[in-house]
Image (cartoon, rainbow, N blue to C red; front, side, top):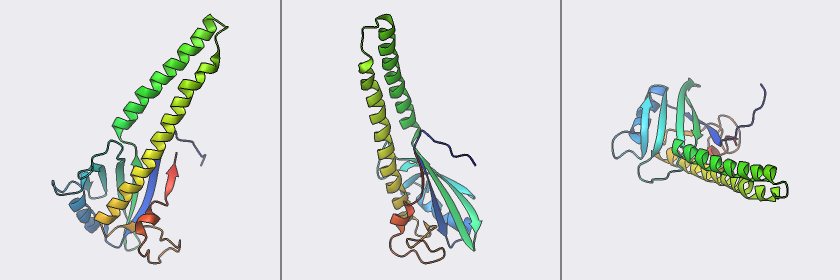
Length: 186
């Protein structure tokens, strides 16, 4: 497998449950889209779920989460994939396009008049780098927050790997901390 670099932040969190997939899906229905009292907006199917946001806390940066429920080891395994919300991606696309256009204008001005400095390219490229850094930082914080709240709302879920790293050992009280130690791609 060839490693690739992804430009957009995303995260995959492995979770597990002692419940079989059908029973876990039923518990998830109470937390996700199960009416106005459910903390998460989204939908649950037999082998997966989608979280579009939290009802009690409105954040544009709340990650879009897709969970896949698999049968395994006398219980269930859940692969939770988080990515930025579509509105954030649209805004970033428009903003970064504007910065690219500003950079293109600076280069065009230099081509037409070679006496003009290309030093001005620092401004749009610096703003683009700052935008990406802020997007990754906010996504990381919101993804940790979303995973922690999902684990609190669905007690049957736990991180797949316990805090001490020993497979099969009890996770103890730090389940939210262990859940955010996950595969992260930026």
